[in-house]
View 1 (cartoon, rainbow over the protein chains, first blue to last red):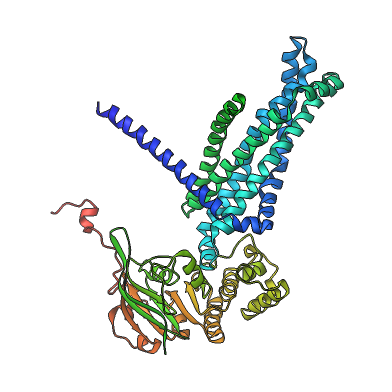
View 2 (view 1 turned 180 degrees about the vertical axis):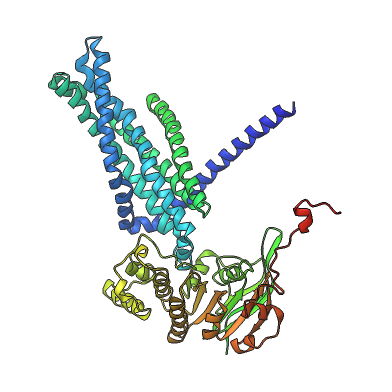
Length: 264
Length: 266
């Protein structure tokens, strides 16, 4: 009986800690938004972070997009051929990428590549007293360090997701049309007829914006709250990747459910 | 001479334990004062209280006549524009060049045109002898050079009060001498007031006007370097002459040796 109670207590304690952490991240996000004025006035600070978070993630995003699109083309062709619909492979590739894989996979890659880098950078700035030095110079680190990195990431992710999907479609085209011999006209025309801008493209962009907010809020929060030790920063970096990945997948489920219902 | 910093009946602690107990301290305008003591005695905490990075539990911390306790963030940031602080290892911004580090406050707090900021920054770097490294990144500097750049950055806006946290730690004797002379020279040239937290007694005694000794959160001795040198007070004597045992025991409190080794009484 005692062991059962201990188990329940442990589960309750863990749950409370997770809820507390989510709450603290939400408060941190609100404070970041409150101190975003400097970033918006001095947009160069954000552009610099778009370079570090976005441009430097380009290679991994583009290569991954190409491979994911190629695999989709291959799998789609194999499956659709059994039903005599191999010409529709373009639709399958485009819809899978625009609705799901583009926003979700690029957000997961972004969390591992840029999210972890943001956490490590802010965590190390804290450990080496750079944030304290900034405060002593009467400059608020939330406004000067956190907010530009947050907005740089939030702006980068939708662009990266669009590039991911574009490269994926090119990858699908290469496999389905160039290698497997699907008719090029059918590939593009069926895609054009089936993909809707509002329901597919725009919803995909909304998803990647929401994922961007979640990943960047988690990454900046974990970095800012990291204990100022090597172990603390490494733990924070790991937590960023794990928490961001879970948040992306959970938010994807919620957003997809809302989008299928048409937001009403 | 009026005091720029006045601390009275200051208590500070974390949770139940008190780090500083009933501290009284004054720093006259234009002087260079050292706060000394063993590691963990509370001297850096005292410095952070003067910079408003920590809030006293009770007592008063006044800088330039203004009470730092209970200031809101806006007031505190206003006050900090009058304070320059050099951190233990420089705390230079690693993503900015040496030039941008020194120019940082000028760009954040003034509307000076870029050509004026350029000239002022080079003059600040020249004052610490490092105009030639302005294009380098902090990772390319030695420990001593990084601290000199940090000094240039701390004095960028000609502050009234300059706080130095362990500026000599980990430096070779030549760099230590250079930093020591710069601390004195910048203080006098800028007409500033400086507070130096250190445990390097020999270097400090060459440059400072007055010394406070902190032990276990209490000011146990104070005086000019000459008074400190001649002091017969056991703690000061042990500290100045670097004796291994004295009021500060060599052994950290522990149970009896026999008990720890599990030896039986015969």
